[in-house]
Amino acid sequence: MHGENGTRERGWRRGRIVGAALGAALLVGLGTGLVARLLMRAIKLAIGVDVEFSMAGTAGILIVFVVLAVPAAVTATARPVIRHGGRWVTALVTGWASARTGFADAQSILLADEGRLPLLAALAVAFAVLVVAQGQLTQRVTRHLAGGGGGVDP
Image (cartoon, rainbow, N blue to C red; front, side, top):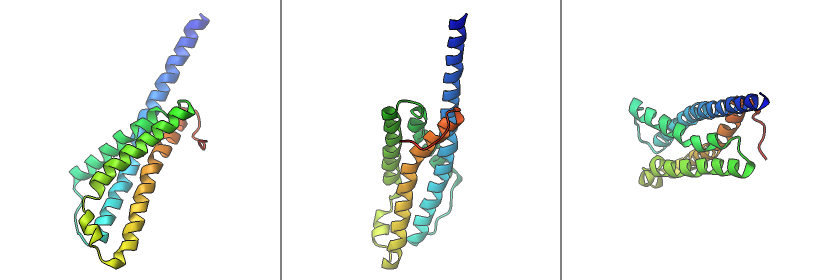
């Protein structure tokens, strides 16, 4: 009888962790995707290009950021070495994807007025911080939703 209850408890815990990982990837991915979209818009405005948001483009960015949050989310409750690896996989893949698409106007950035370069540099740094923070935040939210607390990670 005791063995059956233990198995059931482990099953509930796994289900709670999976649900927490999916929920965290969705919440943090949507949030960071929205901030990324705003930063992309700010970069375009800073280089003097006036573009409008498209719903399809925004939806695509949000979906990509949700998907890219998954490695951090599914490793959030693992041993520290795996957890850190999942966080850095999220940061590296998100950073690579962002660099490939977010700076598609590299020539425009390089040819921007000299007075705009500090703003462009600040926006690029903000984007980098967002990319690195996404994995950490996803793992904290996953642990919180799973009932393990979302405290500071060593």
